[in-house]
Image 1 (cartoon, rainbow, N blue to C red):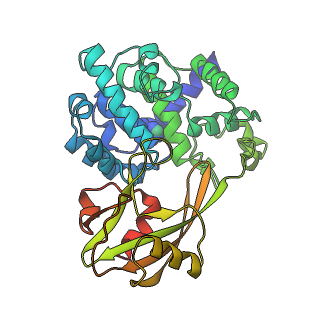
Image 2: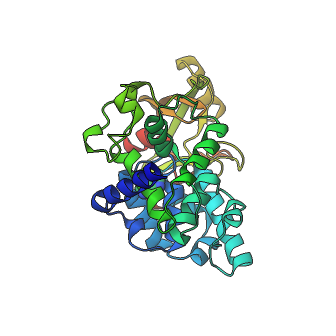
Image 3: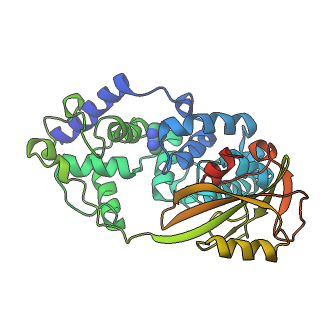
Length: 346
Ligand code: ADE
């Protein structure tokens, strides 16, 4: 017990002096904490900040989120990736309005039952917003704890996450569960960092950390290698006519569902293929120019893209795309980051 007390005491002391000032830490509004936690999954704090501020300006309450127009929501999320997270937010907001009178429930299982809220997020919201005694074990926390205990369990396994959650509960202080969970996350994000040099001389646990004492930092945490990503080749068509550009709305299922994109074909195309494609689309007389290459990495797939810029004299109509003004791509249509390199050259 003595050592457990020291672990949480020294951690909280460190946190009190070192925590970053972040917009979602200004108050304990559960809505703000929820949105920040969803944005912070897979995205760095510095990148999240401007998105968070803008989101709060446009959708300051759960009621605003529940009734936001889908395209507006996608536009607010544009660039953050994982667009289903935003769709789940809206669906959960509707449940919160309909079933919980517009208040996020102060109950772990009820939080967990909301769309898009998993164990980590339920733990983070529950502890930070409501001071519930629940763990919030994300990648940061797993790194800190496996190093602290010299534990070589595979951190990608659910079993490891659950076991770490149970161990965390053994030294969670009763009075400050939210700060305690945030302190663990903060330590992982700013001191016990991945890839390269953790700042062990600034760590409140340097005297007890097994990985530090036994020189195992480079070997922990253990992650089993993931399967290689599938590679998909794409030819992306930048069809332009003066200030207009053609875009296509993706289907409502699967990757980047319901978002806009430049018309494209799911294969590499040589000059001959492109000529044929243009003939099929009644644009054989148009001028073409190579428009660079781009690569975009999703969790399970990589897109390897080659752009073709086609300048048309008239905006040829097609059921496959619509014509919009180029400047509308900035504030009206949500174009995923994958296509950003092509948008930039327009
Ligand atoms: N990463 C995940 N949750 C976080 C939080 N509340 N503060 C800072 N970084 C985080």
